[in-house]
Image (cartoon, rainbow, N blue to C red):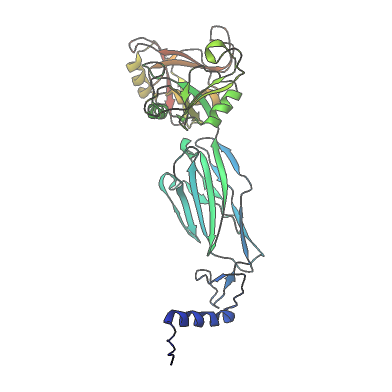
Length: 364
């Protein structure tokens, strides 16, 4: 005689659950969920037959340091919903070169929270239903990168990306102790000290298109070593090699040493040549700028003033790193080559007497 074994409890529970599905409106080719946050009090259930869309009308945004920028993002539903939904909007940032995705802002309804270096510099525009555009203020050099707008509604999760790029000027830099003395991390530091950041390949390529020609190889932000040539010549790849951006590829960031290509953007304030009754040494130059309510200008600030403010002066002056330079926008006799640029005399002995360029953060 065979004895029937009692059915396992798990099987019984599963059968009970399946018997309830028709009452909930279940269909074999869809799943359902109940969104408590968006519930209307009537036990409303939303199916995935309603599709969430997220898009950006402007995938590339170009701006200047210190300015504001709006990164567009809009979401909508198909078919259109009869009542608004409370969604979670999240903006995150991925640097152009390496690094991890970083939270910028999270918003759920009226509650908004910003993070890290973006704190108090970002908010949502929200001009119309479905507008999740990110408004950024006081843009910084390191804000360049790819931004992701993610909209989450229950189990639905859609996103769009916007690339932010700062317009600026690229300049080659080598320290006082000479050519090819910088590791990758040294290059990062010296650019930062000169009110700039390591240039990306895209920024160097654009500078090359605008005429930058430099035969010394320098670090870029991605860890490659490259240099731009507009006039082919023997020491710079050979006469037979077409103009372009020459590349050494990726180099060891701790062992290999080169120069640096730095990137600076527009600046708030003003760089000016300080009129003095007599020339000054480097220590005196720092002091006279301070006495004038300013500070001695950095190399990146001089380049930005030349590029964006049209600074033109045929007098060499001290800069913060101990170099002597002067900016020319209107080439003329006795002011260097017959093309615009920032001229450099290199690093003079600090006791020598010269003029000085100052930087004032306020309006002058």
